[in-house]
Picture 1 (cartoon, rainbow, N blue to C red):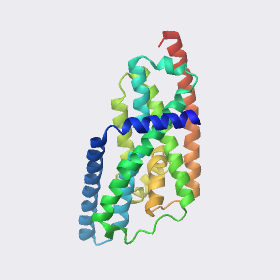
Picture 2: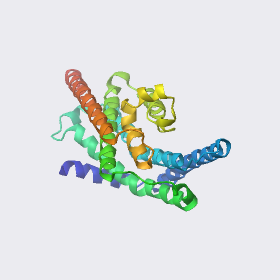
Picture 3: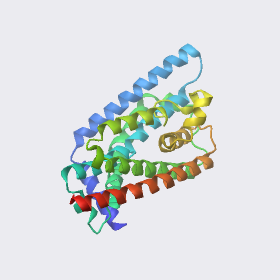
Length: 261
């Protein structure tokens, strides 16, 4: 555990060097929130129904996506593969899995402090009225558990994508595909309860819904599913993904040992 926290603190300090990058990242996220906000306000005028809950959902989804480690975890592994020094990490006393885990924890702490909080403060200043209908989650404990499970699942999938760079070399295309699937199947752009019912029944059980939609829907208060059931779905996907990752990790380790890195 101490090794994980050491890598987390190290990554936090490394990120602290890029202060202007935070400013631009906060502004870009806020602009994305603005676009969604005014789109739904237009829909509200045309269709004559209250969209404050959806506006809160969009805010939660866009900010929650900042702390998901799926792409940063993939890039961490991919960079080691492309540099050719992944074999050195595999033979270290500390597991590469936990090194990456600690680095991503450092990223989360940094983004919470310097990106998520500023975005929410800006939103509160300019769009306080959107919170008038927001009642918050029914159970904070279940929400926290769901957020943790979604983060772990995103990390495992990101790790798997990173390992695939030993075969694909470049994982940019795969990352783009995953980003699109998170937007559509994970409800990062639109709440799944607005989808046609036959699509809802399919996507609600997908790993992408477990990563993004479940925690965001519970936080924003628009969940149409049983929270405890969603926790079991998330745990099931973590179990499946962990088994696949274990097999991939052994395959890559054996391959690199034979090839010498």
